[in-house]
Image (cartoon, rainbow over all chains, first blue to last red):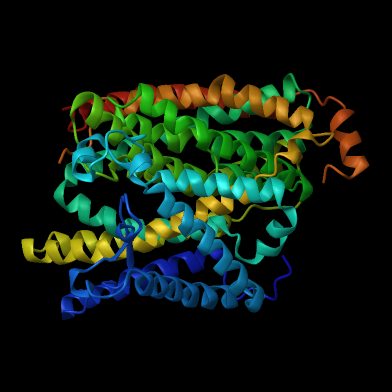
Length: 479
Length: 53
């Protein structure tokens, strides 16, 4: 994309936008329902049930006005962000509008009762059956819509590029998610602490086991050079695009190497996103937190991993309710995925630093070259700070008193609307980044072979074992 | 990009560079540390206040 001089990057923007959205919600303490007008989407059987304002105080607001206000709010916020990114504003406004329209249509369709309703709601909705997918089916529909656009309408994909920013959207969603997790954690501090500790253990294990095996296989059996093998190992085994780029920079590869690896990572992240949540639903509904951690360890790229956590959360809760009569509290599974993924992101900087150190001191000695510790900060994903601040603030608020917790809950019911919309935008944007024609291109075969072998041969399964070791028996609270 | 014939050639005809000792150390250290820490972490999680329902 032809962008002007960047005044901020997407990572920092996600922090500021996410915190601004959360920060505005503190007006609740002054009696102002900041996002009471925002469009909440519900499971529906007739069109007038789809949209309603979040707050009952705005019950008189027509649904379309609520949706229009929600769109305008996001448009203004994201256009300011696009300006700070140096993006072409007119094209951004148009493409964001198109993306929002498609993504929201998918989100609304995903809430259709025959698709979304869980079994306990069938009688209330007066329907005899449903696919039991919950409203998060809208994410899958947005992903499929994105895939269709990318693969059948390449010119439209090109025209939408200024607003196709999955990493920006998902990082903003994660910062907002921090607020919701803070409120939920206030009710269950011990479990929240446990998830963080076990998540940290799981990702250290994944890093140390995945990377050397992928690197060894790439070098020994596929005969990749060091320049290719290291970004490939990081891309396949750690966190996709960011890890491949960080490793490429750390060992000084040509820019094209991590780009090639990243294109494969994105395509396979979509395949994983479409498959793994349904596998988890079938086989791990009795171990929901294992499933959440597994998504974080197995699905590459932040967007796809957190998105798969959200889908897994919905699918498993629906399955557990139907098969075992257990109603788990929402978002704990998705939060486990997010926690694991965030630790992975944090460690990308550390791992890149270690690789740079090893490369410059032992593998490709460069006289006079020194690795700066500041590189760790440079690589540190800043949106994690936004998540931590939002989490800490709401946790602090929600532990003050019962009244404060009630206000905090109503705050996050408003911010959740935007979190979900950022997720839907993420899914659509991920889909558009996945052009399967790339897989057929000559020269990708060898990369594809090592990716397939490592991902489906052991990464998914080692991730499952590691998740099981650290999370089995840990259950979300029930409601 | 894949369209670049030089890159396609490079991927297809890449010459094998044998693993050197530093790479072997990196691989073995990482794996060894991973397996060692696995034991430590499993013990720690057993000591951690369990939330098994």
